Length: 371
Image (cartoon, rainbow, N blue to C red; front, side):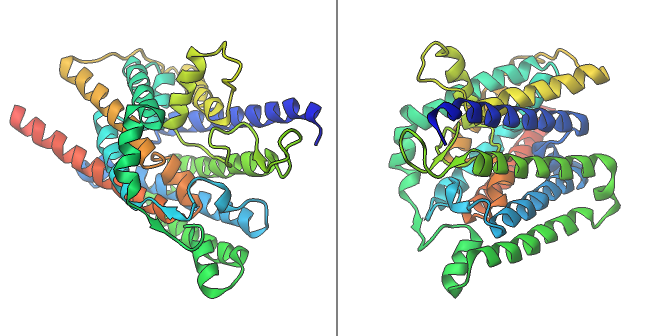
């Protein structure tokens, strides 16, 4: 590729990501897709409908990503999720902190963006607090604490922590064959679980599960295939265009929210470039707003009182810290990370679920005692 072709390729990657983010936001707004809501439905009512939608999206993402690995389009090792160093304690603790925070904030990072698009001023406050806490955990005071404590506890694996790579190493077999087998096996089991009951086969569950899972796979292709240069014309290095991590990326909504605010504040700084993560954040809000306005569901929403404000501020801060420590959120680890079959992603998801259940139990305890 010539240097003169770079701007065009970068624009293509960013516009494709933005378009897919608009689709993500539109589907999430239309179907009320929400992981925190899914956990709350189970804890409070025993209703698994929204959880089946999340698991269906996982299954589709797992099958799609590993199919691309199987045909040689992408490699899990090119993502941040499948590194040989397994930060199991960071994944678990960060996930739990994030899960507790998303309960206080009435939704995870992606839900915050969707609710912003629907007119929630509460979510706008959560967005700002999350961005500040996430940036401090990425590069500020909290990052020093993170690196000096949780990140020091790790397990060094002989190869990437994704299951196909680990099994290929153990059996001396090809990673691509294991990707096909595990992708179809694990992803297929997730899809089967989601569709096993009638509640998992209703229109909203199918639209959100199939649609959002497919979007995650599509973004992996945009970043890992379309935006991949084996030899950058300027640096001559293997490069993934327009990513903050310099690896291939799919959707995640904690660190990109921090990068979005940073880019907005320092827009005149020529070193601050528009990235895939920033395009995804803006796209989700636009997609959600478009559906909310089209369906007449757009409503301005403010805080109910001091306690409601405090809960959302604390929740946003916990999500910002926890999401960075865990290397992702309910979408970043729960869909994008799990699609690579990385061990750390499964640990982070377990932590998020545990933290969310704890947060919901705490809220119930608070209501009972206040009454």
